[in-house]
Length: 172
Image 1 (tube, rainbow, N blue to C red):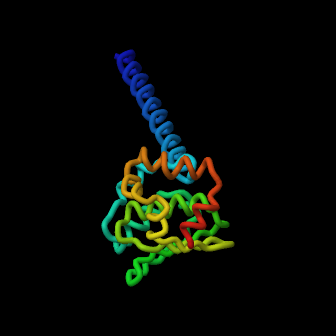
Image 2: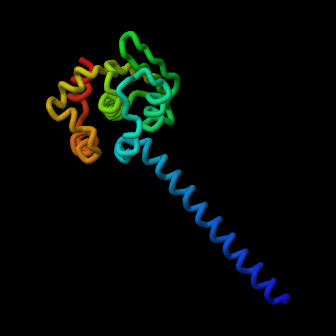
């Protein structure tokens, strides 16, 4: 009888340790994914497709979109200006052209009536318009909603090339 109880307790301990191990590894994986989402280089655009919306007026949707784009760990106050279809986002870090280009492109693709994004960093600001972003991509703009196309046409070129021409076009 005592052997049976000992065996049951032993099995229960092994199962408990197994569950703790699995949960611990899942937490590490989630933490790693969060870190990867902070960088333009490793961001997974597919993870933000859930925030696609016709209207920028859904404050929680657009805020959550920017909570899941690069630099979200440096995002500060945000503001919606519905009269001008403008989203103002403040970052408590210095300017990052690559993240500004990436985030603006993603936002314009996903939020259909968003017209202007006003990004404020501690050392500079960017006012980026939908018209300029669409002008940069031309007929390809609508196809960027596909994560594979987004990676090919936005993410990889940002990482491989200088962004001076992009930011000049986006903010002209």
